[in-house]
Length: 477
Image (cartoon, rainbow, N blue to C red):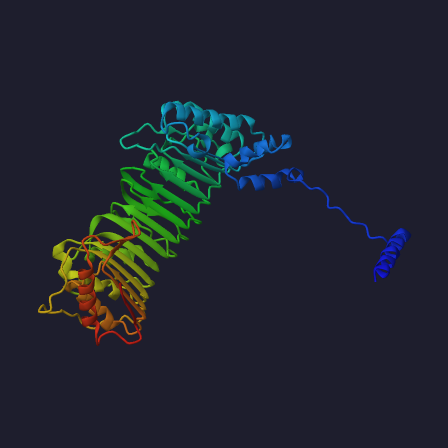
């Protein structure tokens, strides 16, 4: 057998010698540095700046690779060592020194993304001017200057945006612009931001006229956020913003909002309550309204359907004043509303008027899902107290009802029973004694015990018995 194997090996070698040998092809040694520069840029742009700089120690060929990185993000976490004390002069000097070192080495003529995230102080200003000069020379597309200090309340020493950044040569390059804790004064010959897609302004010092001129010039704007910019005047943009899809106005001292945005899909408003004019936004589907002020049921149901005629999803958070336990008649309707989330804070005296919240369902004939997060200090229902009812008002599309802060007080039970008796297709009913805040996205169990939970469950089941459909899934947490 061994002789047979030797003969086969010998025959194979003989065949290989006569031109039939199979040559083993070696793969070419392709290294990452052999890739085109634009491909390298794409790879490096996905890495944090600190990791990009670290590539220089891999070999002598890698020492200059990081210099072509198209995305430059500078923040204290990546540019300062852990040995420096946060907020100290040494900390600031180390940040400045390291940023300058990277920019001096950078050899690319084009930078796609440039970001500075560091609390503003006097020592930083002159260097910021130089860095903005680099931005202008590099034709940056996406610029973010986040200069909000750790403790900035009461401070007005915002960074004045250099005029060279507001010239036509620079503004025409920008696609996304984020500015935090800066001051903007438009030059007399301001030509606008013709190619901006996303504009994010936070704690920016600007006059209402300059803000109006700046936003109005963004004809391609799709996303706009204005946070803590105090105009002490109206925020009015009369010129059309035909591509604007998202608008956020939060915690601003203003007197009125008016936008001409025909394609607007999402509106987010937080802070004080003031008149809103979005009557041109007939495609608006999602609205989030979080008010510091108190609202009344009457005002809400007569104003919001007019302001938001086509909204399908509404999230409303506020302190509510309820004066009546009856249904309110209003000619205004949320004709397209399918999802409603209310987060309401009430005083003890209004606990007995919770039944009036059924007016929201009457004004929303297509409602499918209703979430009620209600914070009110009230004791559970006593069996000898009467349960009031309202005339029948079918809610033929309501499938899901979720109530948190449900303590089984008289007003909540009246509201619950009314909904159950008027929702023939209700699929899921969830009652949670813990109050869920959308602001913090947490459930609060403060002051609640196992005895309390047991009492809530017992009262709830007793009053739902015989009223809830067998097809409805009931969860009492």
